[in-house]
Structure formats: C-alpha cells, structure tokens
Length: 306
Image 1: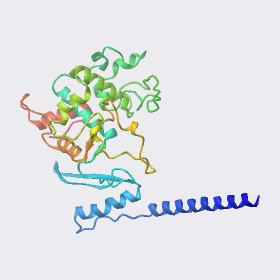
Image 2: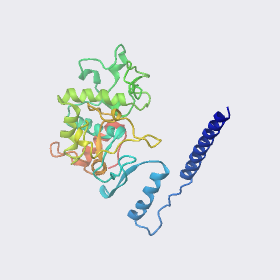
Image 3: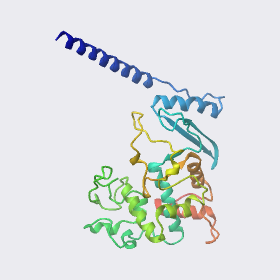
Image 4: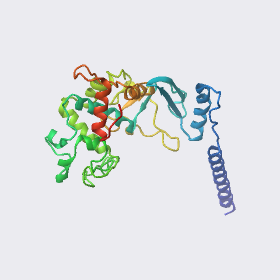
C-alpha cells in the first residue's frame, strides 16, 4: 500500500506540473502583446515583427500574407513552417487548401457562363439536370443560380453525415429565396449544373475559364501527389496536423477543394477589384467596367455606382 501511495503521489505531482504548465502557457499566450504599427515604421518591418508574434499567440504554425493597393499587389510574404515540428518554411509559393475561399473563385466561373448567355441566373437549376438533387420536394424547382450565389437556397451548409462518411438525404429547410443561410450544398448543386452545361469536369472547366485567364497557374481543384512537397498542412486549434483524408479530395467541389498560393489568390482578388475585372468586353461592345457591374448587380440585386 505504501508503494501504491508513492506511485499515486508521484502521478498526482506529474499531473499537477502538467496542469500548472498548461495554465502558465495559456496565460503566456493570452497576454502576448503584438505591437501596433508605429507611425514611421515601414509596413514590411512591422509585418516581420507582428506576424510571427501572432503565430505564437494563436498557436498557428505558418501563414502567408498579400496586400493589394489600387488593384495591384504591393506586398506578399510567408512566415513560419508548413507543418508543426518540421523546418520547411512557408513562402509565396506555398500551397494552401483554400477551404471556403474556393466559393468566390467558383462563383466567378459560374458568372462567366452568365456573361456568355449559357447560364440563366433566374432559371430553375433542376431544368439543367436529368436527375433531381433532392428527392420528393417540389420546392427544388424554385432554386436558381442567383439563390445559390446569395446563399438563399433553403439548404443547410452540409447534409447530415457529410463529414463522417455516412451522408444522409439532403432536405430543404425553408422556402427558397426567403432567408439567408450559408450553404456549401448549394454550391455543389450549382457545380453539377456547370458541369452539365460545359460537358467538362469542374477542375477542367475552372482551369480553362478562370485559373489560366487570371494567370493562377499554381492553383488546383483536385489533389495531385506532386503537390505534397509544397502544401501547407491544415492544423486544428490545438496546433496538430489534421488527417490527410480531410484535405486530399479526389473529386473537385465548388465549395471547398481549391488549392492555391497567396500570390495566385492575390491575382484573383486584384482581378475582382480592378475596374475592367477580367471579363473580355470586345464581344459585346460594352466596356469592361459595365460588364462587371451588370453581373454583380444581377447576382446581388444591388445597384453599383458608375
């Protein structure tokens, strides 16, 4: 019994030390103060001091930042590592899983079809497909591309069981077009329509219609083993790398599967901010600014100032 008491006492002491260390570390990260930019300090010097500080404060292995001014990229750089415990540094060529930042890029690709008259924003998406996306609900006929792009389809973000490997049937949760609810399912519904219209798998269409025209040559919609050496591994809130199956998709999805670099995504953002955007205006006789505004106004139901 004396021996057991010594073991228990020892274990308790170890546990106490661990708990104390955890509390101290938590307090340390909580009270880390990353200095604001001084008036005469250059942006680059401030970022070189602040980004590493923020990485430590929030337990993030690495990050990349791009800054766009007047539609032009003026700064880009990476800090930290691609995977915790390794030395491979994040830089401008590091590939990141874009996750939901895939959606704006796909939306651009869908609007290219709108521009070319191949996709109607207000036509029922079910009319473009042979099989219904949802079974046994007539409200599906009301869902349009406009509703998908504005997250008003009535779909949840994902169908139950989507991330467990045992997906259950998708259900419409409210009258389409009446409420906002963020939905990845809606984007994947529109993806099927885009593939049916173009006769191409999404990754091929997006490369031809968006990635190549915008010089996003280091961006991909499906995983390739050749990307292994340049990918920044996703980490959870505890700073641990997540399982590979979560970020190595075999099929392209409109909502989540883009892999891109900070430079490529900056090119996309610059195109969106630019006056002429990236829409070719020669074929319709309008200036690029008007074409861009017409498309955005059509989707968002708002009037942009000239």
